[in-house]
Length: 361
Image 1 (cartoon, one colour):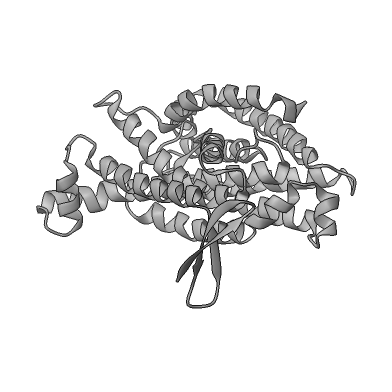
Image 2 (cartoon, one colour):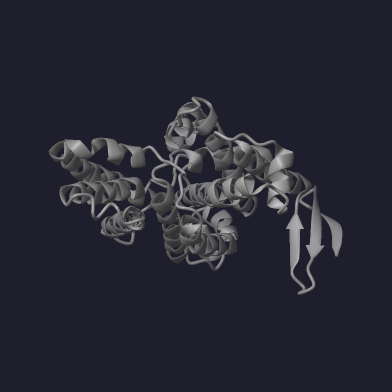
């Protein structure tokens, strides 16, 4: 059952579920959410139809309905659909984590790689590839070796950042973890550079992973990422209201009954887990966590109750779009998707930096 109300002079749509839960949505946020969902579906269909064997939207929909030829059914369901679904999951995770980090650290430039995730994953994957080459490729030939190494390396780097940031004592500020992440990233990146210098024959294979890609081994990668996607989305979205409270400062949040440090570390852990899962499946795809939350903020408002769920939708749509660009811009060859997001994210980062100068000074 739906109704209408007004909050602070602005109209609000109230939806009451059968369980007695009331959802309060502003019309603009509802419109942006519907637009993000439709964009994700449309771009997903476009991505499925793109490739060496182009298909129209009607052909894609007919094949998904089970009325395509055997060749079309194999191409769509076994090759392209898993890649599109993985892109939606990875894009949603990176965007959700970016919005979460920006709220936790009250820093508009925070993104999923802030805590050393990229450096940890890069060092672990570099180590596995260089060791695998040294034993004749037996190690890197296993389908789960590189994703597992990236996942463990990401979480290990985040743990190092936590420990270093926690050494600041009780008086530490949100900026302490940012500085700790920078230090850990520099240390791990130096280790990666050393390994590459000692194993120059592995450089091309390492960089093909570092530049990001959505090539999948069928539905296997989707099944690996999906549990972490669901867990991260559940934890972050259930605590999204706390980010609005944290934005007013720790003292004010504590006076309202919130435990700032406990909430902050819970949200960071959830976002870092999701980022590690995304990195393990797709490599390093940067700037999604900056572009998407800021775009949602401009379109739908500054409340994290709105930013986080819409970032989840918009992030998937954004990565589906960049995947289409990566596959078609230089066809028949494919541009690494991390290069496309970097080309878009670089100017966007400068824009955010200029508009947020007062916040960072």
